Amino acid sequence: MLIIKSTWNDKKTFKLLPITSEAPFVECLYDPESDVFVAISPIKKTSLHMLPKLDDNGDPQKTKAPTATGRMMKEERKTIETFQEYYIEDHESIDSIIKYVAVNPDFDYKQFLNSQSV
View 1 (cartoon, helix red, strand yellow):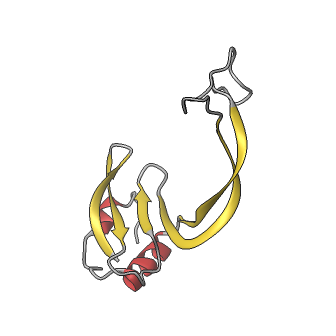
View 2: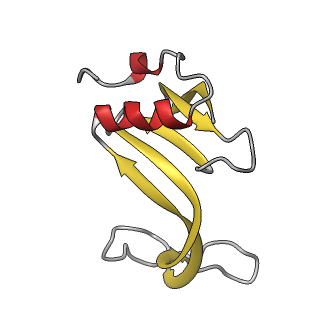
View 3: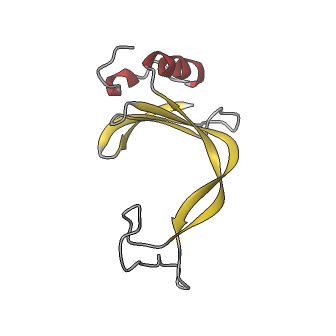
């Protein structure tokens, strides 16, 4: 996987992108706001999600009043297939994963990590 500079929620960060079909992850990214490294596996799982209920035109249906979650659109529970995600908070573990999967581990990704030392 290749480490690149990126932006997440208007903050500078880094991502890992697969460069071969044998890559262990679909994508990895570091969220500087929550100080979490997310690794998205190619393994798929089926899970339930609340999604906007759509009208005949494909637009979300609006509600007259906010729902219990504060949203102004109707929602329905759907079963969808998603990729398995792993959330890593420990900087030493992040470092280990990067050293194991990155083809350019000398990339200075530590500049994007929050103040904890690795």
